[in-house]
Image (tube, rainbow, N blue to C red; front, side):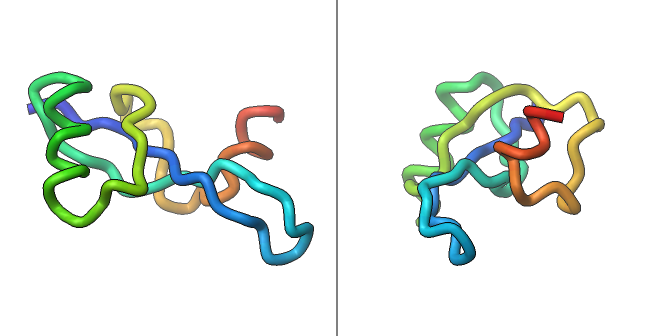
Length: 69
């Protein structure tokens, strides 16, 4: 199984702006399978974004700021 990075859209408590945050890593045989696993297991708020290369870790939570650096 592949591992996929997810993102979560949420309001930043500091700025009150909608931002993208790093969500949990989800396993699946494809992006569609990983998204289905999220949707069917109480994580429908997550969007499967990309396959994990092992580079992004749980320490990165503010995904918008990470991508712009």
